[in-house]
Length: 195
Image 1 (tube, rainbow, N blue to C red):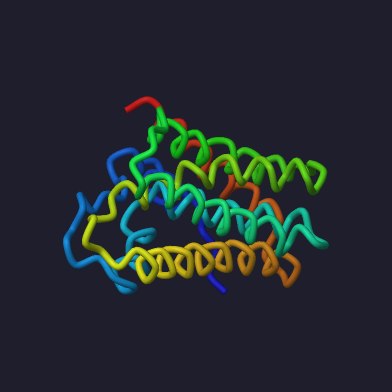
Image 2: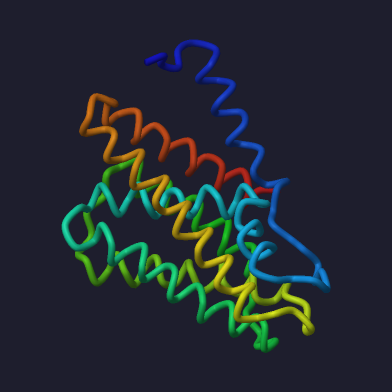
C-alpha cells in the first residue's frame, strides 16, 4: 500500500482547503428526481467533508454510536430538507454548513469522545443545515420524496466511506492518519468560514 509523503500531503491538504468555492447548489433544477438527489451531496465539497467526518467520528466513538450517530444525521437532515422545501426561514445556513465541517473535522482530529446523546444532538443540529440546503434548492415541481430519498442515500454512502476509513485504521492504517484527515477537514471548514 502506498502512503502519502512529503509533497503529496501538501497537495492533499491544498485540495481539501479549496472547499469554500465548492458549495452544492442546484438552483432549483426542474427535473429533480432520485438521481439528482443522489448526486447532489457529491456536488459540493462542504457536504462531502462534513458527511465523511460524521462517519469517521461515529467509528471513532464505536459501540452504538457507530450506527446511531449517522442515522441521526440522515433522519434529522431529512427534517431539515422538509423545512427548506416548505420555505421556512433558517438563518445562516451556509455558515452552519461550513461550521459543521470545521467542528466535525476537529472532533475527528482530536478523537473526541462525547456521550452518545450529546454526539447525536450535535450531528443533528448540523444535519438541519445540510438538509435545509438540499430542501431549499428543490424545485416546486420536483419529486420531493424521490429527491429526498436520493440525498439521504448519498449521505449514508458518504457516512459509510468515513466509517470504512476509520475501521481501516484498525487494519494497519495508522490512527494518526485518520486524525490528520480530521485536521484537514477542519482546516477546510475554517477556509469556508473565511471566504
